Image (cartoon, rainbow, N blue to C red):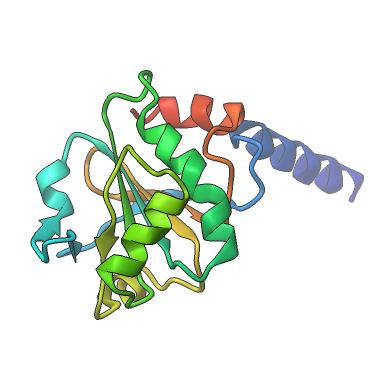
Length: 169
């Protein structure tokens, strides 16, 4: 029995050391594949993530009324500008069914400069990714598969997170 407890303790600690030290990140043992991940830009043009194969993609689902979204959006904006992450594409996707004017005001108020807002008006992606709330961030590897997700908000400038995500860049 002691051996089992020690073994479980060692395995748990070994796995924990591989994580970036952020409690609300879930790393999938087997990456998930999705078909037809399509959302809209501010001109209602369709964006398909298949067009970005070869890049690390971050799909951040948010809404203007979400306080944790307001807290994390500036750090996500700075992550996009990080020169060490040159193969990263960040798509902040509004799922609040909000107007472009309201979303633009949100970006202006938070001084967001490094990416544009995107939209999922029928919330098809929220269903596809089985989102349980916002913010939720889906991390897509260069092969187009979800390898991790962040449930809730984080500081995207956190050194542990940046060093971890560099491995996938």
